[in-house]
Length: 441
Ligand SMILES: Cc1ncc(COP(=O)(O)O)c(C=O)c1O
Image (cartoon, rainbow, N blue to C red; front, side, top):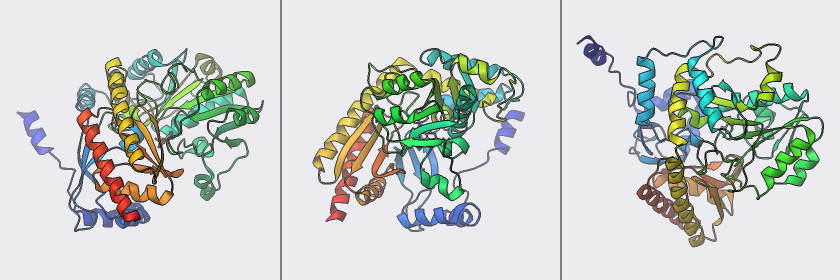
């Protein structure tokens, strides 16, 4: 009876408590006014309300005249929503964990949940990558990997890819493009960028002053670039020759997105099973429910980093007990061979659909490329891509152009997407591009 009463009393509403107009006003006043202006300018409702599976509804229009839209989320927030919105299995685990007495835990102490998640990750990692340091965000976990590489090698240099993106925190930001660093007066000659996919450029850049090479397996913000066969094995070889750490950022491409659990280990080319020194995950670790990121690495690195002081690196909320419980359930779901086979099957249908659209619109679309359920559509002009994005959103498919390559759309449906839904998405994209052709005329 008491539990029932508490449930009724605490039945608090969160979605739609304010009108769209009120939210925009508050957002402008207290969060980010220029961002509100941009979304208003695009002219459609963009505040997510109810959400479930691959769908979410926007709150009634960002302009008072706009109706609420039902959207298929093909942004997936870069892989956060690999399991769709509010996945019932994940929500149940979080509820069970709360009911079972878990909270964030104490980062200074040891943790049953971190131990269990660390073991599960080690079992899934390629080679002998078996140690994990936890964080909250992808950027934090990337910072950790670069930090540990510097401490291990006693060198400062870092090589990353032009147009790569690893986050907006300290070292992660330094490894990214200029326009994100310059406004913050954040430059450092130890951080050098080379063209992605060019092994010769990498060989020239990697000297004995370099601590690490950091790459996204599929640069997402950089345009969903696909490295030529042999590139990653060559990078591994170059790193080995010069005693340099190889860090793979699998924040977007990992956890089954390519149809293999790790993009670097079979997800790009079936025969390329590269074992880097570090694998970093974020986004999908949370299942969109509880934030967690991981920086996993080989035991020889751990020995060096923590030998003097095991408390040298900490994160109060990174690797929280609740977050570990959620991530552990996600790993069980996404590492299941049947789940990965589903991603491969859906990916094939999706890729074929996109290629057909490209063939029908060869005057607009230059190339379609991807792996599994991670696809890029490159247009001949940035303007085609940007109008195309809006046009496709108007057909109810949320996606976006790549921040560092604005002529390319990145399309990442949740990994739980079903065949009929893929067909629906393809039809909507086709309609969106058709509308773009009309605008272009
Ligand atoms: C490939 C990649 N790495 C790292 C990050 C940083 O993650 P976060 O925003 O959680 O710090 C992102 C974020 O978009 C990303 O796409």
